[in-house]
Amino acid sequence: MLTLLAPFLAQVVTATAGARLEGRAIRSDASYYEAAARPSAGLDFSGRHLQVLAQYSPSFTLTPLESNPALLVFHSGGLYVNYGWRNTTYSVGEFIGYGMLNFRSLAVTGGIGLSQPTNGMTSTPAGAGVPTGTGTPTGTGTPAGTGTPTGTGTPTGTGTPANGASGQANGTLHCNTPGASQSGANCAQNVRYLTSTTSVGVNHAFSATTLLQVGLAYIVTGTVDQDLRDTYPLVKGPLASGLLTEILDRTNRVGVAATFQLSSASNGSDLWLAATQATWNHDFGPRTSSQLGVGISVGRTWRTDGYIAYSIYPTFLSALVHQVRTYPGTLVFTAGLTSAPALDPSPYAIVLDPRVTIMGTVAWQRDRFFAAVGGNTTFSYGGPAQNTIALFGATAGVGYQFGKAFSMDAGVRAAYQDYAGAAVLPLTYAGFVGMTFGLGGALN
Image 1 (cartoon, one colour):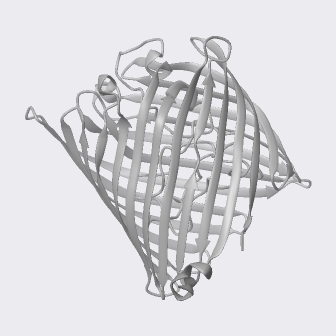
Image 2: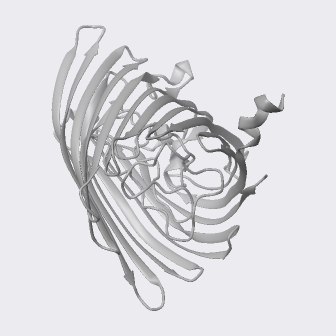
Image 3: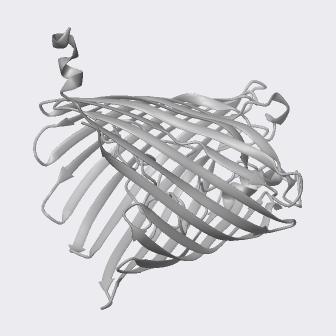
C-alpha cells in the first residue's frame, strides 16, 4: 500500500489562502455604493516530475448597498496537472467560471478572472497583443492562490491587474449591442455568465536556447440565459496554438507564434481565424526591456442564411518597461501599443473587428509605500460600422504593504465604452478602498 502511495507522499504540498476586500462608490448615469470580496485558496502538489495544482477563487459583490442590494456570486477555479520528463513537459488543465456578473461594476473593479492562460503557451498568442489594463503596482501583488499555475505560463506583455490600483482589467465589455441603450442599461444589468477553458499542452526544449510550445484548448464563453443570448451570445470552439522561441544572447530573444481558432456562436454564425506573428524581445539594460511583434491574421465568417465575409488584418505589438531609481524609491514606466483583430460576438454574427490599444502606467514604490497612475484606450479601425468600438479605462491609487500577508490601497478608477455610436457604458467613476490578505506555506 505504501508503495502505491509513495509518489504522492514524496510530493511537497503547499497551501495558499488569501482574500481581496473592496468598497466602491460608483458615479455614472446612476450613483450607488457596493462592496466586494474575493477569497482564494490553492493547493500545490509538486514533486520531481509531477505537479498538481488546484485553485478556487469566488467573488461576491453586494450592490447597490443603499437600496435593495443584490448579491452577485461568481465562482472561478481550475485544476492543472503538469508532468515533466527530461526536456519535455506535458500539461492538462481545466478552468471554469460561472455566476452572476454586472459589467458596469466589472469595468471599475480589478477583475475577477474571466479567463485563464492556455496550457503550453508562455508567450502572447499571435494577434493577442498586450493585455488591456493598467498593470499591478509593485508591492500590491496577487492574493495568494489566485496566480497562474506553474507550467501554464502568463502571456508576455504588461500584465493584467489582479487587485489594487488597477484599470479595466477585462478589456472590452460584453455589453456591446449597437444602439440598445444610450443610458448604459446593457452594462448595468446582471447577467448569468459562463466561461470555460479545457486545455492540453506540450513544451519541449531542444536545447538551452530553443523551446517549442504547442497547445490545444476548447473555449466556451457567454451567457447561459436564453433570453439574453442576442446581447451576450454564447461562443464556443477549439483553439490550437504553437510557439517557437530562440534565445540569441543575454539581451535578445526571438519567437514565431501561430494560432488557429474555430468559433461557433449561438446567433447562428461561425468563424475561423488563422494568425501568425514574429516577436523580438530586447533588454537594453538591467532596468529596461522591450518587445516588438508583427504578423498577419486571416478570418472567415459565415451564417446559416448564406452570408460569408473574409477579412485580412495586420497585427502589431510593442511594449516598453523602464525602471528608474529615484533615491529614495523606485519609479517604473510601462507603455504598450498593439493592433490586432478582436473576435466580436455581435447579435447578428460573430465577426473580426480590427482594434488598436494604447496603454501606459507610472508606478512608484518606496519601502512599503506604493503609488500608481495609468490608463488604456482601445478603438476600432477599418471594420464594419456596426461593430466599431471606442473605450478607455484609467486609474490612480496609493497603498501600503503592512507585511507579507496584508496590504491596503485606495484610489479612483474611470471607464467608458462606445459601441456603434451608442454609449453602452457612459462615463463611470469609482472611488475605492481595499484590503488584500495572503498566506502560504508548505504542509509537509
